[in-house]
Image (cartoon, rainbow, N blue to C red; front, side):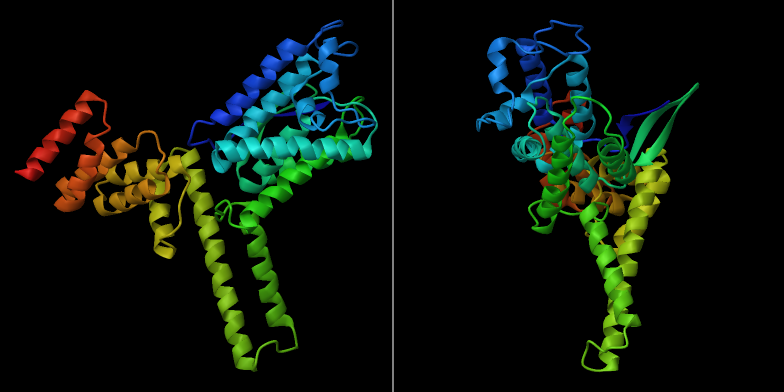
Length: 391
């Protein structure tokens, strides 16, 4: 007997995922309103819905257009909804953070629709449940965070423990390939809806990256594919006997340019991975040191919100005022909706005022912070610093 259950990821959303919470709450409320427990509530075999709710299931032989959405909010048992909402919470919070609330809701509903279409093509049996939409969200997580670690609880005979597995392998191999292609043994499971959901989630998210509708970073699957393509082009250029450029010298120059670009991106990727690893270990001093190396290579590199804030705070605590100010500036520029931005502005104002001796930017950030601060001690500190600058 082998059981593998993901219990957490090493990335967390930096904004409260209200849209995902709303979807979970909606599913639970609808389950309570529609569930009809004629049998054991954990099995859900016969009479799982109240009679009026059955018309909202998706019936492939005679489907109604609304059923392609409504079926995804119905569940056939307590285990059914607990499983779906658990995975939606585990992976959906970070996808919500990446896509935004409106984008995430649209993505979730589109995933439900595509999954329903996939099921009607592959099966004639009626279906209900959010599994297809959750699969779409999980596929999106795979694309956005392929190199993050998923802590998996394993149970093998009498041995129980945890192991960290990258999202690329756990979702790609275990959830998609193994559970839905190899081990298709469970009855009454809509495998077609699952696979359609995963396919939609992966392809749609890659499309969002490719078109620039969501920003790409060096650790997502789209960036990994682009790096692989660059390496492939480089190998083709240096190994081909045909000269694709006007002259051997031009070919050699082009090959060197591709090689330098590839090596730079690989180094950036390595440094970003090392930063994430050091922060996970709570070795912020080492993470800050690697961050400084990273921005020397590419000053436009932006870390996840909490990572960047942790490093900025660490640099400030190490009296690296200029570097800390640069990190705080980058934070405010890229995370404008951070709920405690006034505290970052206060810290930045103090750095410019007391340590960098730059009164103009100090006044700018202290005045902005003074308008929003609510903590009495912070308000007092801000006013005192403003008074000192203005005298």
